[in-house]
Image 1: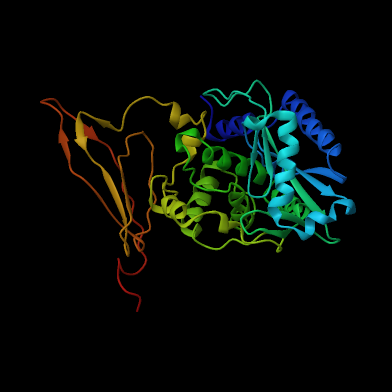
Image 2: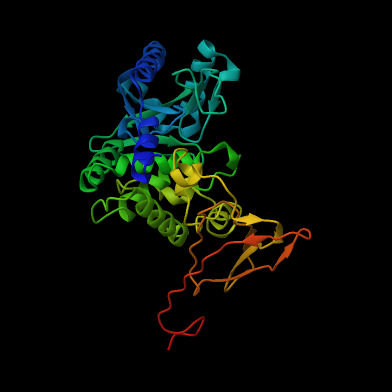
Length: 360
């Protein structure tokens, strides 16, 4: 059986692009770049986003391409942001059809109709790309934001430099860990309610929260990161380039509440075995509950009405709770029949000062 470290390294390797995927990505993004060159005055174009930062996870979709417009297209800069997005949309519909092209807040998405199977396989093909119109203002860029109707400042090169620096400071494990967390976040089981949206917010939080050097254990590092995400998901997280609006502005309050106490609570501190298919604990057989019913865990905000209810049934599942923030309980267990039954749990409590006591 693989060790925990070996399992994570195998999982990390699965999320890295192989030669066939890189070749298809190159063909697709060059196809879109060459086509838009015939429709607009484009000074240059370059890859950006998580693909360029090497934090893109699989399946490979939404590869961001920056299209820096020439001075001949300056008329767009004085108009509402939606105008240039409308024109990019119309141009791409001419080539790919209306069913494959979709307007987004700051880009146009082109879907190549690639099927994604239950194991996230795409036959090594790219699912989609995002075309982002931009103007070079000298020391930064401006891109259209249809939500505000304005052009907003950004600098993807600063984002890339910060990710590179974080990766090096974290023993060259930062990007791999971010890819694994983003893969968990994109799991289809979440449906339309992925815990963290936009996924770039995971990277932004990781820039600050994954610090102090690599600790040598994926299990511990990921548990610590998830605990921090749960604790600080309501904070404001600025643009790392210090130019555009806060990245956390794109995550609504309801999603933040779900992430910390709702359907997909980040307070569950053993995501490791669930996000890593090769995790040895996930491969073990046996049940933590046999022959009984009940044992439901209930966790509620200490100072609010929100809560979550679930049953811990998978062996080695763990829950980390802060008793100063939440109230928690488990329902009694009852036998299902005349035979024997059991529920195996271990509770560790670490206290400093009072329990749910006011600060003196």
